[in-house]
Amino acid sequence: MSTPQVPTSQAGPSKEDRSARVAVTIFPLLILASFVIAMVVPDRAASLASGTNVALGIIMFGMGLTLTVPDFTLVARRPVPVVIGVVAQYVIMPSVAWVLTKVFQLDPALAAGVILVGCAPGGTSSNVISYLGKGDVALSVTMTSISTLLAPIMTPLLTKWLAGQYMPVAGGDMAVSIVKIVLVPVLGGLIVRAVAGRLVAKVLPALPWVSVLGICYVVLAVVGKSADTIKAAGLLVVLVVACHNVFGYLLGWCAGHLAAKDDPRVARTTSIEVGMQNSGLAAGLAIQYLTPEAALPGAVFSIWHNLSGAVLATIYRRSDARLRGRGRGAARPSAAA
Image 1 (cartoon, rainbow, N blue to C red):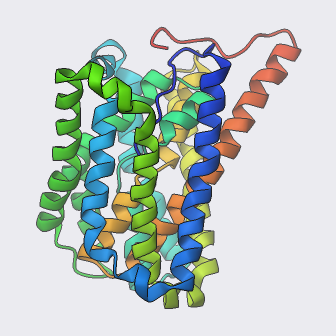
Image 2 (image 1 turned 90 degrees about the vertical axis):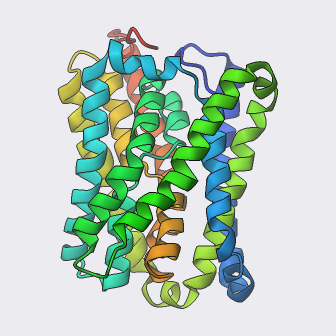
Image 3 (image 1 turned 90 degrees about the horizontal axis):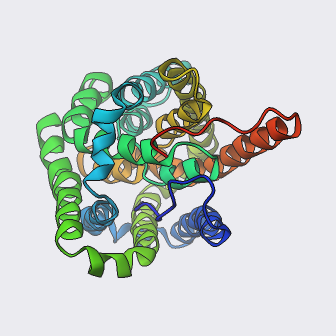
């Protein structure tokens, strides 16, 4: 979903903090409501499938509107944590997905869907979670942006390599689709922001809500087409998705700790970036290039990672409170925040 505007300072106004808290609370509830509606009226929900690419394009355009050129300068100023974070994104999550498909012996469609989620770029809601968890928001935005721009190459390449054993994957066609529904809208939004910054600033507060409606649309279509599969294997999919997400957080934290041992905020941010995926994109691609069943892991991940992300942010905030209580101070702020 498009990134709600959060301050890069960790001493942000309480009004903005409350706004971000509302975002990460309401978003997953709306997505969960879409899930329930699709299960109740699956045929009507499934009829929305033809518009998933449009919904994803709107989401990505909204993300582009939230970006500015300085968001990318962090690559030059602090290349190590950015590079390690992006590499971890495209190494850890695909690898964990592949292992989980073997451990749980998933059927081909679900296995391919789990792998596709793992090969997707980072989810943009990670920026809000990073803010709430007192991570490095500037680093979070940069990691999300870079992994998204690399998606037309990395996502189809990794998916074809890892999921091709389960079912045919049209890697070239998938790459073209990602360019159309991700790269072009993101760059378009970035250009519009650069040209009409004042006008865009007026609509920025509404962008998260427009984006979450797009995610809800995708969830409705995916769940509607997969209702029978959900009834048969729903609990198994939830278990696999939860393991995927949690291992992403844990291994992402390890990667971030290696990148900057003297700044715990980098480890927090990297864990969030790696563990939270653009699962809406994965679900949309699965509908188009795999099967409706393969889109199910993406739909479930959309709900799960927002809920788990809010919990993780609370854990990180409380760890800071414990440190302050011991007189050691909070995590040391970085130069980019």
